[in-house]
Length: 216
Image (cartoon, rainbow, N blue to C red):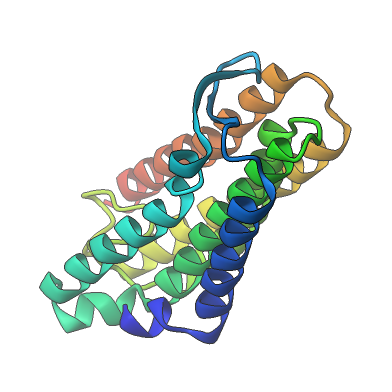
């Protein structure tokens, strides 16, 4: 876990997040209210003062890092070894997502059009592609991957489930990136986001259940 938290890629993303945050404090007027939440229509529906709003993304990264460090300190070493590839991808991906969100908020504060839903869709699409590629490399464990009772003690069934779900995540990520580029209405982007996450999980779970039932 610590290797993922302090990897060169993650540290570079954290440094970029700090730089973007400092740029926000220097360039965005102190009296400005910045959006911190967006509704189903894609329009912002909650605003905070600049000083507080710009702390949200860094605070989220710190909270995530502390949570993962806490989990890593209480999970058996063999469990961590089985899921190391997933965390090596997930941690910088989450930091990158916070960086993209922070950059968008700063640009909004500077008067650029609000493209937050599109930015999040694009970022999560890239994240899904990365995670989908790494899922087949995980071994049965209790903290990462599609974890279902009937596959935990069957390495072959675990691999088959992670492989299919990972492929569907990659496909969903590609669709999300395409939607972020061509789809105009934010509501449809949100629908695409939900489908890209839920469809692979539902299909992968159903597939693993049927496969487990057939092999008994």
